[in-house]
Length: 208
Image (cartoon, rainbow, N blue to C red; front, side):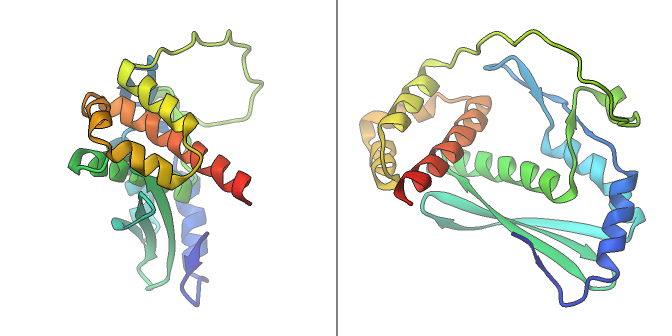
């Protein structure tokens, strides 16, 4: 959900101009657990900033409160006229310690900024610089199934058994289960965050 300033007559044309000048974000980082690539926060910012500045736009992002085990990430897009657009994303914490919070903030900033600006990830810098003219998608063989690390597999199995957010918090905070979180890699944290988001959506639908 977006919130905006009372007037947007200068903001929206500027966003339109900036998006017309942007291309996709290069996937410059590797996820070893899934043998895949993803766009880092640095790559997202480097792609967006020139077009935003040319259109008299800037952005800011900041973490907020912890709500039900998720941290708020607020993204604000601002025009030099003073007009603005703001949205807040809630990113579940996979681990309640500084590393877990830092990973969730980086993850949330990356995806919130891409969603706000309509920036798609692309395979490499060459593709990022090319015109994205629609063309038939090539037929590709399905990728090989990824193998979770033992720690990620353990936490994912526990996630499937928890029916409520309270039950998940209790499991995560148990001393015997903290060992699993201590051995997660950064890539594991990204993967686990995505699974927790899907799990929360499922729990919410069941409870509705």
